[in-house]
Length: 260
Image (tube, rainbow, N blue to C red; front, side, top):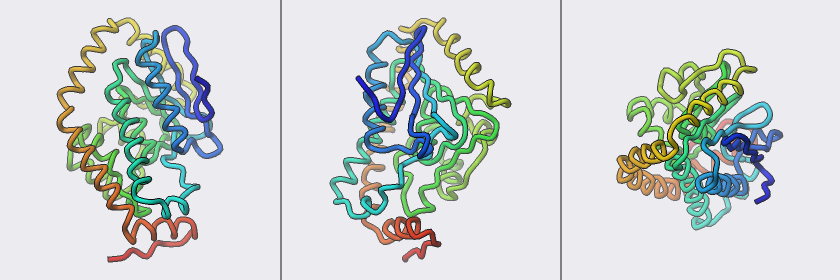
């Protein structure tokens, strides 16, 4: 399959998937999400042993591409539900993929980009990388990332990150358990990522797949319910005053005037 928004390369059993919209800080579009789904599906059934996810240019992923915000505010409810369901499929596929995944993070990993980075089995980030679940700052709800974030770090710490919408460092992400290793020197990120990939390749692929299935099935019922609630919350939010005001204030480069 040919791709337009991502780069896919495979060598020595490692499939590297690189988000490739550097001029937009690798912000996600529906096309990119569909291409990621296809590349991950290929990896699941192909001969690779490990998947590495990275970003081209100055950032890992800035989240949703906001260039189409005006169009977003005018979409019918069914279209919003379709968009959210696609993101849910992507996150769920990443979480349940039978092969180990590594996110190699530099620059910003924001909103859905933070979700992509931290849902991977392993997350390596350079010193200076920034994370954040910033949806509440523009009238959105971090519905889908909330399900996985709560599962990873617990309710109390998830509330802090989701309700403040603050940016936080790679070091804090490491303390929270969202990042496995902080790489001090950016030029060493690639080497450390592939050192981990080589370590994983030395393990039994069948045993790792079975282990991942076990971990996924243990959380399946909880995630099914959480994602169902997330999709409902997503649809409800897209009809609110604050959602429309968040989009308008962002486009007009002014402070939002939130409703009651």
